Length: 384
Image (cartoon, rainbow, N blue to C red; front, side, top):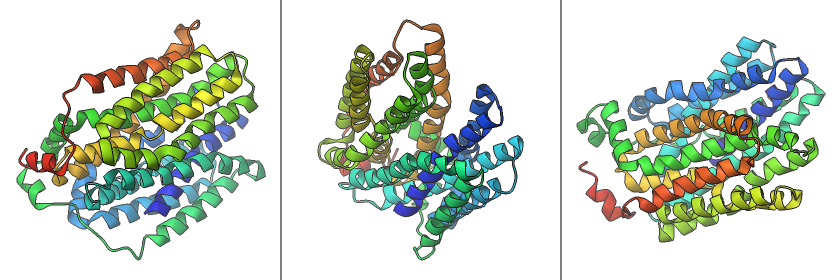
């Protein structure tokens, strides 16, 4: 599962810059290029409501295998034609397949992990995806050897990861309690009532990641940064998150996910405020973004762990689906929010928008009544 998640991250990290570079070379406008990129997240949103029932009926392995197969075949067909709308459809299918793969692996991990090791196990999952996603842009650079090159390499790697899943045994989420507790809509409603605070973390991570990758290059170029400087600035956030994700996950197992997330959002807000104050000095800006990645780069996996703490097991499939939806909504709205900020607040640093966002979420976590994050609490909400 770790290998297939890493390779899935690599394929996603490759697609965005590779297709953007190809479209730019073909004369496609930046706005249309950005619209094309939303196809993947639209695929995630479309498939999300339909994943819970197949996992309960067929198990998690068939969902993961089908999703991986859709990704492999879609990447292969990228090499067979060049068409704006065909590539849009293929991107959509990659989004559907990737989400099936991730919901299946997330549910597998969260339902089978010991309650005292959830943070560590989920953080390993997060590191594997982040590492693949960070390598993806380097794979995209092979487009200089031909349009099909990055897609062919990614197809072969994803096929290897898919084959490695074949020997694993199938497993099922808890079904009996889920059937007693009503329809999928009722379960989604219960997840939102019990775990909306946890869902804020993947939403903010998706929004932040999309703002940094989509808006920061534009802001940097307008403020005198070179393309080379921006190419170093963007990966350091992901690298920082990879370095600290497992230690923070283990720490959250000890002192609680909610406590760690509160501090993470607060310190992240201060670091981006410092980046805004020192953005005239490139190396200070680079250091602040790196340190912010070390702090905030694990919010998706910790949000996933926090969601696991606050839900009974029969709600975990629905909870994992809603985590994916929250991340996708953040990824879609992030560039819009960042673009508006850059366009209309020209005298204010772009980093201020991120600092205000993280600060607001930190305040929400502080003001909420603390929930117990223990197996005892999970038993208390089983009858919800």
